[in-house]
Image 1 (cartoon, rainbow, N blue to C red):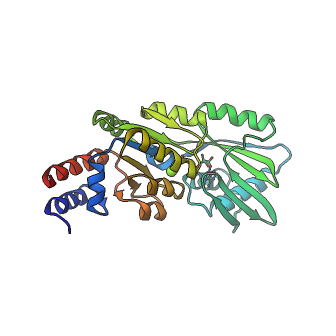
Image 2: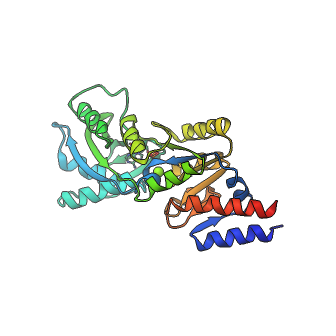
Image 3: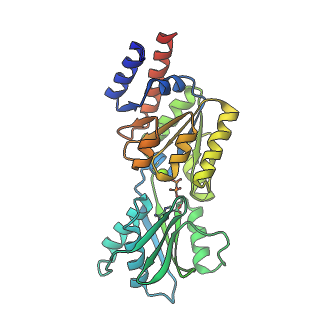
Length: 289
Ligand code: ADP
Ligand code: MG
């Protein structure tokens, strides 16, 4: 049965844009030692902008962009939305249609478009080096997210995107650190981009190139090292890690799977409410004891 102290914390949370799906999560939050943040859409706004488009000389620009936009239209990933928006705005003559798309969580998407095989996503480490990959590497070192567009296994284009930190990310991290909580960023993005965002957010630690299962591994590992863990994320790719943490927290605008898997939801995507959540949990804990 639910105690008055728990009820009071839950309703106080609701007034502050915090949805607690039960008292047990508050109890766990009161002992929190470490929190892992997803990067894209959690620490960052998740509204990346396309900054560079480089197309292989032998390819037809219109064909490649038509494929890319049609395929990314089927994905909810923030990078996908940005790519579609960019093509529609900057290349109005490019027509799009329905592609058959499969989301490869943590990697990107693979698709069939006009009978051809396409994939859009993370740079492949084993890709033979050429002008395009060199260009991508340089952009990644500038802190940009680099996306490869491949047609029949051949690299056709490199797209670079830049995303900014949420305006409250730095203060939220600072408050958590002041509360004695170890802060970590987990991301599927490459090492160079991860490093520059982690430094800007001022997290204690970061891990790059994390596939969804790697995020689970890291969360469990952090639990062993520090104790009670929380993981906060917004994407399908974060759901397994949200489930693996002692407390899973979803961004209110996150994907359905993240919202369903999480124990706590930040209704307005306001990261500074993390401090509030911990305060409420500690207050409840004191009253209960
Ligand atoms: P994060 O952990 O930062 O939220 P994700 O795990 O969602 O990142 O994605 C990891 C990487 O996979 C991205 O940096 C990108 O390179 C690639 N990726 C994922 N989804 C897409 C997509 N729809 N289009 C292009 N690239 C994608
Ligand atoms: Mg994300």
